[in-house]
Every structure is written in structure tokens, then in C-alpha cells.
Length: 135
Image (cartoon, rainbow, N blue to C red):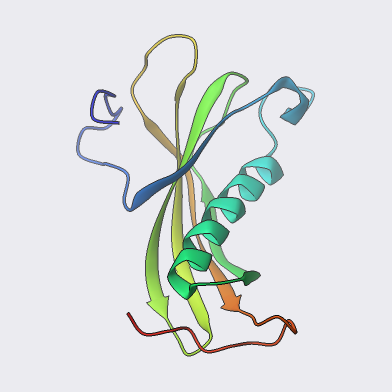
């Protein structure tokens, strides 16, 4: 990450890089752009990882507060999702997630393509809400 340039030097990813994946041809619409639902799915995976780590156990997605797409993602782009805890309740946790891309084939500046806030609930082995430990 430190070696990668950022398209808008004033803006940098917030939070921790949680996952990085390559956008594949199977994830595109007929115009060759990556489906928004695929990006949403990658963000949910990253948010689930961050929420489960913080909650010290299993979590489930209960909502997406907001989601905003800034730029398209193309086949071959490396998509990195950055996560940051926004709020912790008794059983729920809100995670801000940003998706940034760079070209897989040729080094290029990072650019933010989308962001959103996802909410997760910690659950126990019976799939019932459980208290998130204080850290």
C-alpha cells in the first residue's frame, strides 16, 4: 500500500485493508463494467471479517445504512476493501467500508470507487443476538 499512488492525493483510504480481490470477467454486465452487486458482496465480506474480529465471534449482516458508487470497476482491477468501526452497540456494530481500486496489469493510482456503512449483529451458537465484549 505504501508504494501505491493515490489518484487524489488529498484523500486516502480510511481504516484497515481487510481484503483484496481481482475483478473477473464473470462479474461484469454486458458493457464490461463490474456489477454493483459484486462490489457490494466484496464489501459485505470485508465488513463481516472486521465485525467478527471486533465481536470476537460470529456476526450477521442486518443492514446497509448507505451506499454510494463513485466510479466504475473494470475487469482486472484489484479491489481492496478498507474497514473501520464506526459504532458499537450492545449487540450490533456499524462498519464503514471503502472500496478502492488499482489496475492489476499496470501500476496505477488508487481510486475510491464506492463506500458505505454496514451494520452487523453478533450472534451465538443458537443464532440469537449476543453481547459484544468490551475491549
